[in-house]
Length: 405
Image (cartoon, rainbow, N blue to C red; front, side, top):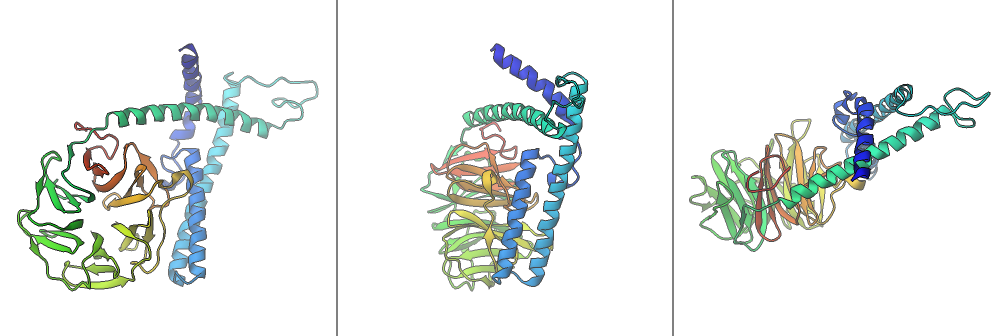
Protein backbone atom coordinates (compact mmCIF):
# COMPACT_ATOMS: atom_id res chain seq x y z
CA UNK A 1 0.00 0.00 0.00
CA UNK A 2 2.85 2.36 0.93
CA UNK A 3 4.59 1.57 -2.36
CA UNK A 4 1.40 2.25 -4.32
CA UNK A 5 0.88 5.56 -2.50
CA UNK A 6 4.47 6.62 -3.21
CA UNK A 7 4.06 5.71 -6.87
CA UNK A 8 0.86 7.75 -7.10
CA UNK A 9 2.55 10.78 -5.52
CA UNK A 10 5.49 10.60 -7.91
CA UNK A 11 3.18 10.15 -10.88
CA UNK A 12 1.10 13.10 -9.66
CA UNK A 13 4.12 15.40 -9.54
CA UNK A 14 5.21 14.30 -13.00
CA UNK A 15 1.73 14.80 -14.39
CA UNK A 16 1.65 18.35 -13.02
CA UNK A 17 5.04 19.15 -14.52
CA UNK A 18 4.27 17.55 -17.87
CA UNK A 19 0.69 18.82 -18.02
CA UNK A 20 1.47 21.40 -20.75
CA UNK A 21 2.51 18.58 -23.08
CA UNK A 22 -0.98 17.16 -23.21
CA UNK A 23 -3.26 20.17 -23.00
CA UNK A 24 -1.49 22.28 -25.59
CA UNK A 25 -3.57 22.91 -28.67
CA UNK A 26 -2.24 20.66 -31.46
CA UNK A 27 -0.93 22.11 -34.69
CA UNK A 28 -3.78 20.43 -36.58
CA UNK A 29 -7.02 18.54 -35.98
CA UNK A 30 -5.25 15.37 -37.09
CA UNK A 31 -3.51 15.14 -33.68
CA UNK A 32 -6.34 16.58 -31.57
CA UNK A 33 -6.62 14.70 -28.27
CA UNK A 34 -3.87 12.19 -29.06
CA UNK A 35 -0.97 11.17 -26.84
CA UNK A 36 2.56 11.12 -28.35
CA UNK A 37 2.62 7.34 -28.85
CA UNK A 38 -0.76 7.52 -30.58
CA UNK A 39 0.51 10.28 -32.88
CA UNK A 40 3.44 8.05 -33.83
CA UNK A 41 1.02 5.21 -34.66
CA UNK A 42 -1.09 7.56 -36.78
CA UNK A 43 2.05 8.77 -38.55
CA UNK A 44 3.07 5.20 -39.39
CA UNK A 45 -0.50 4.51 -40.51
CA UNK A 46 -0.39 7.48 -42.90
CA UNK A 47 2.89 6.22 -44.37
CA UNK A 48 1.37 2.76 -44.83
CA UNK A 49 -1.67 4.26 -46.60
CA UNK A 50 0.65 6.26 -48.82
CA UNK A 51 2.54 3.11 -49.75
CA UNK A 52 -0.72 1.23 -50.48
CA UNK A 53 -1.85 4.10 -52.71
CA UNK A 54 1.42 3.98 -54.63
CA UNK A 55 1.10 0.22 -55.17
CA UNK A 56 -2.55 0.46 -56.23
CA UNK A 57 -1.64 3.11 -58.79
CA UNK A 58 1.28 1.10 -60.15
CA UNK A 59 -0.89 -1.98 -60.76
CA UNK A 60 -3.68 0.06 -62.34
CA UNK A 61 -6.24 0.00 -59.53
CA UNK A 62 -6.29 3.80 -59.27
CA UNK A 63 -6.77 6.44 -61.92
CA UNK A 64 -4.23 9.24 -62.18
CA UNK A 65 -6.70 11.73 -60.65
CA UNK A 66 -7.57 9.46 -57.71
CA UNK A 67 -3.89 8.67 -57.18
CA UNK A 68 -2.93 12.34 -57.05
CA UNK A 69 -5.79 13.16 -54.65
CA UNK A 70 -5.07 10.29 -52.25
CA UNK A 71 -1.31 10.80 -52.39
CA UNK A 72 -1.63 14.49 -51.55
CA UNK A 73 -4.05 13.70 -48.71
CA UNK A 74 -1.79 11.10 -47.05
CA UNK A 75 1.34 13.22 -47.57
CA UNK A 76 -0.31 16.19 -45.88
CA UNK A 77 -1.55 14.02 -43.01
CA UNK A 78 1.90 12.50 -42.45
CA UNK A 79 3.55 15.94 -42.57
CA UNK A 80 1.14 17.39 -40.00
CA UNK A 81 1.68 14.48 -37.63
CA UNK A 82 5.46 14.67 -37.98
CA UNK A 83 5.38 18.41 -37.31
CA UNK A 84 3.28 17.78 -34.20
CA UNK A 85 5.82 15.21 -32.95
CA UNK A 86 8.70 17.66 -33.50
CA UNK A 87 6.94 20.46 -31.64
CA UNK A 88 6.07 18.20 -28.71
CA UNK A 89 9.69 17.03 -28.53
CA UNK A 90 10.84 20.65 -28.24
CA UNK A 91 8.29 21.31 -25.51
CA UNK A 92 9.39 18.20 -23.59
CA UNK A 93 12.96 19.50 -23.54
CA UNK A 94 11.75 22.83 -22.13
CA UNK A 95 9.73 21.07 -19.42
CA UNK A 96 12.76 18.99 -18.37
CA UNK A 97 14.79 22.18 -17.96
CA UNK A 98 11.98 23.61 -15.83
CA UNK A 99 11.92 20.46 -13.71
CA UNK A 100 15.67 20.79 -13.11
CA UNK A 101 15.47 24.45 -12.19
CA UNK A 102 12.73 23.80 -9.62
CA UNK A 103 14.55 20.82 -8.11
CA UNK A 104 12.05 18.13 -9.18
CA UNK A 105 14.89 16.48 -11.10
CA UNK A 106 18.29 16.76 -9.34
CA UNK A 107 20.93 18.64 -11.29
CA UNK A 108 23.85 16.40 -12.34
CA UNK A 109 27.15 16.72 -10.50
CA UNK A 110 29.65 19.12 -12.06
CA UNK A 111 33.21 17.94 -12.28
CA UNK A 112 36.14 20.32 -12.78
CA UNK A 113 36.39 21.26 -16.42
CA UNK A 114 33.09 19.67 -17.28
CA UNK A 115 30.28 21.53 -18.97
CA UNK A 116 27.71 22.76 -16.46
CA UNK A 117 24.50 20.73 -16.59
CA UNK A 118 25.95 17.60 -18.22
CA UNK A 119 28.14 14.82 -16.79
CA UNK A 120 31.51 14.30 -18.45
CA UNK A 121 31.25 12.39 -21.68
CA UNK A 122 27.46 12.78 -21.91
CA UNK A 123 25.81 15.49 -23.96
CA UNK A 124 22.75 17.33 -22.73
CA UNK A 125 20.61 15.93 -25.57
CA UNK A 126 20.83 12.22 -24.61
CA UNK A 127 20.43 13.10 -20.94
CA UNK A 128 17.22 14.95 -21.64
CA UNK A 129 15.97 12.06 -23.70
CA UNK A 130 16.74 9.62 -20.89
CA UNK A 131 15.03 11.74 -18.22
CA UNK A 132 11.97 12.39 -20.34
CA UNK A 133 11.86 8.72 -21.32
CA UNK A 134 11.87 7.57 -17.68
CA UNK A 135 9.21 10.12 -16.77
CA UNK A 136 7.06 9.13 -19.71
CA UNK A 137 7.47 5.45 -18.83
CA UNK A 138 6.26 6.05 -15.25
CA UNK A 139 3.26 8.01 -16.49
CA UNK A 140 2.53 5.41 -19.16
CA UNK A 141 2.53 2.60 -16.60
CA UNK A 142 0.16 4.55 -14.37
CA UNK A 143 -2.11 5.33 -17.32
CA UNK A 144 -2.17 1.70 -18.42
CA UNK A 145 -3.03 0.52 -14.90
CA UNK A 146 -5.81 3.11 -14.63
CA UNK A 147 -7.18 2.25 -18.06
CA UNK A 148 -7.10 -1.47 -17.35
CA UNK A 149 -8.90 -0.94 -14.03
CA UNK A 150 -11.58 1.16 -15.71
CA UNK A 151 -12.11 -1.33 -18.55
CA UNK A 152 -12.29 -4.22 -16.11
CA UNK A 153 -14.93 -2.35 -14.12
CA UNK A 154 -17.00 -1.52 -17.19
CA UNK A 155 -16.86 -5.08 -18.47
CA UNK A 156 -17.74 -6.52 -15.06
CA UNK A 157 -20.88 -4.33 -15.02
CA UNK A 158 -21.84 -5.32 -18.57
CA UNK A 159 -25.36 -6.77 -18.67
CA UNK A 160 -27.73 -7.60 -21.56
CA UNK A 161 -31.22 -6.13 -21.81
CA UNK A 162 -32.57 -9.33 -23.34
CA UNK A 163 -31.65 -12.73 -24.72
CA UNK A 164 -33.27 -12.95 -28.13
CA UNK A 165 -35.11 -16.11 -29.23
CA UNK A 166 -33.06 -16.45 -32.41
CA UNK A 167 -30.40 -18.72 -33.88
CA UNK A 168 -28.04 -16.06 -35.22
CA UNK A 169 -28.24 -12.27 -35.60
CA UNK A 170 -26.99 -10.56 -38.76
CA UNK A 171 -27.75 -6.87 -38.32
CA UNK A 172 -28.91 -4.28 -35.79
CA UNK A 173 -30.50 -1.00 -36.93
CA UNK A 174 -31.49 2.05 -34.88
CA UNK A 175 -34.09 4.10 -36.74
CA UNK A 176 -34.72 7.85 -36.49
CA UNK A 177 -37.71 7.34 -34.20
CA UNK A 178 -35.69 5.39 -31.63
CA UNK A 179 -36.87 1.96 -32.78
CA UNK A 180 -34.56 -1.07 -32.63
CA UNK A 181 -34.46 -3.73 -35.34
CA UNK A 182 -32.58 -7.04 -35.36
CA UNK A 183 -32.36 -9.06 -38.56
CA UNK A 184 -31.60 -12.72 -37.97
CA UNK A 185 -31.45 -16.09 -39.68
CA UNK A 186 -35.20 -16.66 -39.49
CA UNK A 187 -36.71 -13.20 -39.76
CA UNK A 188 -36.88 -9.74 -38.20
CA UNK A 189 -37.48 -8.47 -34.66
CA UNK A 190 -38.53 -4.98 -33.57
CA UNK A 191 -38.40 -3.30 -30.15
CA UNK A 192 -38.83 0.12 -28.59
CA UNK A 193 -36.84 -0.46 -25.39
CA UNK A 194 -34.60 -3.46 -26.16
CA UNK A 195 -36.43 -5.57 -23.59
CA UNK A 196 -39.69 -6.57 -25.28
CA UNK A 197 -39.46 -7.73 -28.91
CA UNK A 198 -42.04 -8.35 -31.62
CA UNK A 199 -41.47 -10.55 -34.67
CA UNK A 200 -42.29 -9.30 -38.16
CA UNK A 201 -44.98 -11.37 -39.95
CA UNK A 202 -42.60 -12.95 -42.44
CA UNK A 203 -39.66 -15.36 -42.34
CA UNK A 204 -36.34 -15.29 -44.11
CA UNK A 205 -32.66 -14.60 -43.54
CA UNK A 206 -32.65 -10.80 -42.98
CA UNK A 207 -29.19 -9.23 -43.48
CA UNK A 208 -30.08 -5.51 -43.60
CA UNK A 209 -32.83 -3.10 -42.52
CA UNK A 210 -33.00 0.42 -43.95
CA UNK A 211 -35.35 3.40 -43.73
CA UNK A 212 -36.17 4.96 -47.10
CA UNK A 213 -38.42 8.00 -46.81
CA UNK A 214 -41.43 6.69 -44.83
CA UNK A 215 -40.72 3.05 -45.63
CA UNK A 216 -38.82 0.27 -43.92
CA UNK A 217 -36.92 -2.05 -46.27
CA UNK A 218 -35.69 -5.50 -45.20
CA UNK A 219 -33.09 -7.24 -47.39
CA UNK A 220 -31.39 -10.61 -47.12
CA UNK A 221 -31.24 -14.14 -48.49
CA UNK A 222 -34.27 -14.27 -50.82
CA UNK A 223 -35.71 -11.35 -48.83
CA UNK A 224 -36.67 -7.94 -50.22
CA UNK A 225 -39.65 -6.73 -48.21
CA UNK A 226 -41.26 -3.35 -47.60
CA UNK A 227 -43.37 -1.91 -44.79
CA UNK A 228 -45.35 1.33 -45.02
CA UNK A 229 -46.72 1.29 -41.45
CA UNK A 230 -43.64 1.14 -39.25
CA UNK A 231 -43.21 -2.62 -39.44
CA UNK A 232 -46.74 -3.80 -38.65
CA UNK A 233 -47.36 -5.28 -42.09
CA UNK A 234 -44.97 -6.23 -44.89
CA UNK A 235 -45.16 -7.07 -48.58
CA UNK A 236 -42.68 -8.20 -51.22
CA UNK A 237 -41.01 -5.33 -53.07
CA UNK A 238 -40.77 -5.62 -56.85
CA UNK A 239 -37.18 -5.29 -58.07
CA UNK A 240 -34.86 -6.02 -60.97
CA UNK A 241 -31.93 -7.51 -59.03
CA UNK A 242 -30.45 -10.63 -60.69
CA UNK A 243 -30.60 -12.33 -57.28
CA UNK A 244 -31.68 -11.53 -53.74
CA UNK A 245 -28.98 -13.12 -51.63
CA UNK A 246 -28.18 -9.71 -50.16
CA UNK A 247 -25.35 -9.65 -47.60
CA UNK A 248 -25.48 -6.08 -46.38
CA UNK A 249 -27.13 -2.85 -47.49
CA UNK A 250 -27.15 0.80 -46.41
CA UNK A 251 -28.46 4.12 -47.64
CA UNK A 252 -25.91 6.85 -48.35
CA UNK A 253 -25.65 10.19 -50.08
CA UNK A 254 -25.84 8.71 -53.56
CA UNK A 255 -28.45 6.00 -52.97
CA UNK A 256 -28.91 2.59 -51.39
CA UNK A 257 -25.99 0.19 -51.84
CA UNK A 258 -26.46 -3.57 -51.57
CA UNK A 259 -24.00 -6.42 -51.98
CA UNK A 260 -25.53 -9.45 -53.72
CA UNK A 261 -23.63 -12.73 -53.36
CA UNK A 262 -22.35 -13.98 -56.70
CA UNK A 263 -23.58 -10.86 -58.52
CA UNK A 264 -21.69 -7.88 -57.08
CA UNK A 265 -22.37 -4.43 -55.68
CA UNK A 266 -25.59 -2.64 -56.70
CA UNK A 267 -27.01 0.84 -56.15
CA UNK A 268 -30.60 2.12 -56.21
CA UNK A 269 -32.50 5.28 -55.40
CA UNK A 270 -35.74 3.51 -54.44
CA UNK A 271 -34.83 -0.16 -53.73
CA UNK A 272 -36.78 -1.13 -56.87
CA UNK A 273 -34.54 -0.31 -59.83
CA UNK A 274 -30.89 -1.29 -59.32
CA UNK A 275 -27.68 -0.69 -61.27
CA UNK A 276 -24.55 -2.82 -61.08
CA UNK A 277 -21.62 -0.87 -59.65
CA UNK A 278 -18.92 -3.50 -59.14
CA UNK A 279 -18.21 -7.17 -59.78
CA UNK A 280 -18.46 -9.70 -56.94
CA UNK A 281 -15.46 -10.29 -54.67
CA UNK A 282 -13.68 -13.56 -54.09
CA UNK A 283 -14.04 -13.21 -50.31
CA UNK A 284 -17.21 -14.02 -48.38
CA UNK A 285 -19.03 -10.76 -47.55
CA UNK A 286 -20.99 -10.49 -44.32
CA UNK A 287 -21.94 -6.81 -43.96
CA UNK A 288 -21.82 -3.41 -45.66
CA UNK A 289 -21.48 0.13 -44.29
CA UNK A 290 -21.16 3.65 -45.73
CA UNK A 291 -19.57 6.92 -44.64
CA UNK A 292 -19.75 10.27 -46.47
CA UNK A 293 -16.67 11.17 -48.51
CA UNK A 294 -15.09 14.61 -48.83
CA UNK A 295 -16.20 14.91 -52.48
CA UNK A 296 -19.90 14.56 -51.71
CA UNK A 297 -20.10 10.82 -52.38
CA UNK A 298 -19.85 7.71 -50.25
CA UNK A 299 -16.98 5.59 -48.98
CA UNK A 300 -17.98 1.92 -48.94
CA UNK A 301 -16.89 -0.66 -46.38
CA UNK A 302 -17.39 -4.42 -46.39
CA UNK A 303 -16.79 -7.08 -43.77
CA UNK A 304 -15.11 -9.52 -46.15
CA UNK A 305 -12.99 -12.56 -45.46
CA UNK A 306 -12.84 -11.82 -41.74
CA UNK A 307 -11.51 -8.27 -42.07
CA UNK A 308 -12.65 -4.80 -43.18
CA UNK A 309 -12.05 -3.41 -46.67
CA UNK A 310 -12.98 -0.03 -48.16
CA UNK A 311 -13.62 1.55 -51.53
CA UNK A 312 -13.56 5.33 -52.11
CA UNK A 313 -14.74 5.02 -55.71
CA UNK A 314 -18.05 3.18 -55.65
CA UNK A 315 -16.61 -0.32 -55.56
CA UNK A 316 -14.17 -0.08 -58.48
CA UNK A 317 -11.15 -0.61 -56.20
CA UNK A 318 -10.78 -2.02 -52.69
CA UNK A 319 -8.06 -1.81 -50.06
CA UNK A 320 -7.60 -2.84 -46.45
CA UNK A 321 -9.39 -0.84 -43.73
CA UNK A 322 -8.37 -3.07 -40.84
CA UNK A 323 -5.80 -0.69 -39.36
CA UNK A 324 -2.17 -1.46 -38.56
CA UNK A 325 -0.10 -2.54 -35.56
CA UNK A 326 -1.79 -2.22 -32.20
CA UNK A 327 -4.37 0.10 -33.80
CA UNK A 328 -5.80 -2.71 -35.94
CA UNK A 329 -9.01 -4.71 -35.55
CA UNK A 330 -8.20 -8.09 -34.01
CA UNK A 331 -10.16 -11.30 -34.37
CA UNK A 332 -12.42 -12.47 -37.20
CA UNK A 333 -14.67 -9.55 -38.18
CA UNK A 334 -18.33 -10.59 -38.22
CA UNK A 335 -20.05 -7.21 -38.47
CA UNK A 336 -19.54 -3.58 -39.40
CA UNK A 337 -21.76 -0.53 -39.00
CA UNK A 338 -21.41 3.22 -39.39
CA UNK A 339 -22.75 6.47 -38.00
CA UNK A 340 -22.57 8.83 -41.01
CA UNK A 341 -23.57 11.86 -38.92
CA UNK A 342 -20.36 11.50 -36.91
CA UNK A 343 -18.12 9.91 -39.52
CA UNK A 344 -17.52 6.89 -37.27
CA UNK A 345 -17.12 3.26 -38.31
CA UNK A 346 -17.61 0.26 -36.03
CA UNK A 347 -16.42 -3.34 -36.37
CA UNK A 348 -17.48 -6.34 -34.31
CA UNK A 349 -15.24 -9.40 -34.12
CA UNK A 350 -14.69 -12.52 -32.08
CA UNK A 351 -12.43 -10.35 -29.89
CA UNK A 352 -14.97 -7.60 -29.16
CA UNK A 353 -15.98 -4.17 -30.45
CA UNK A 354 -13.84 -1.56 -32.25
CA UNK A 355 -14.32 2.05 -33.41
CA UNK A 356 -12.57 4.06 -36.14
CA UNK A 357 -12.76 7.77 -36.88
CA UNK A 358 -10.28 7.58 -39.76
CA UNK A 359 -12.12 5.50 -42.39
CA UNK A 360 -10.52 2.35 -41.03
CA UNK A 361 -6.90 3.54 -41.02
CA UNK A 362 -6.72 2.89 -37.28
CA UNK A 363 -9.04 1.50 -34.60
CA UNK A 364 -9.74 1.83 -30.90
CA UNK A 365 -11.08 -1.03 -28.80
CA UNK A 366 -14.30 -0.25 -26.91
CA UNK A 367 -15.00 -1.73 -23.45
CA UNK A 368 -17.25 -4.58 -24.54
CA UNK A 369 -16.65 -8.18 -23.48
CA UNK A 370 -17.75 -10.90 -25.87
CA UNK A 371 -17.93 -12.03 -29.48
CA UNK A 372 -19.90 -9.46 -31.53
CA UNK A 373 -22.04 -10.64 -34.46
CA UNK A 374 -24.19 -7.53 -35.13
CA UNK A 375 -23.84 -3.78 -34.45
CA UNK A 376 -26.02 -0.70 -34.81
CA UNK A 377 -25.18 2.94 -34.03
CA UNK A 378 -26.89 6.33 -34.13
CA UNK A 379 -25.36 9.21 -32.19
CA UNK A 380 -24.68 8.23 -28.57
CA UNK A 381 -26.84 5.11 -28.84
CA UNK A 382 -25.23 1.81 -29.78
CA UNK A 383 -26.67 -1.69 -29.89
CA UNK A 384 -24.85 -5.02 -30.04
CA UNK A 385 -25.89 -8.66 -30.32
CA UNK A 386 -23.30 -11.24 -29.29
CA UNK A 387 -22.83 -14.82 -30.45
CA UNK A 388 -25.18 -16.06 -27.70
CA UNK A 389 -28.10 -13.93 -28.88
CA UNK A 390 -27.77 -11.42 -26.04
CA UNK A 391 -28.85 -7.87 -26.84
CA UNK A 392 -26.87 -4.97 -25.31
CA UNK A 393 -27.59 -1.24 -25.45
CA UNK A 394 -25.32 1.70 -24.69
CA UNK A 395 -26.44 5.33 -24.40
CA UNK A 396 -22.96 6.78 -24.00
CA UNK A 397 -21.26 5.86 -27.28
CA UNK A 398 -20.15 2.41 -26.16
CA UNK A 399 -18.61 3.52 -22.86
CA UNK A 400 -20.86 1.26 -20.78
CA UNK A 401 -23.23 -1.64 -21.47
CA UNK A 402 -25.69 -2.07 -18.63
CA UNK A 403 -29.44 -2.05 -18.31
CA UNK A 404 -29.21 1.42 -16.77
CA UNK A 405 -26.68 2.93 -19.19
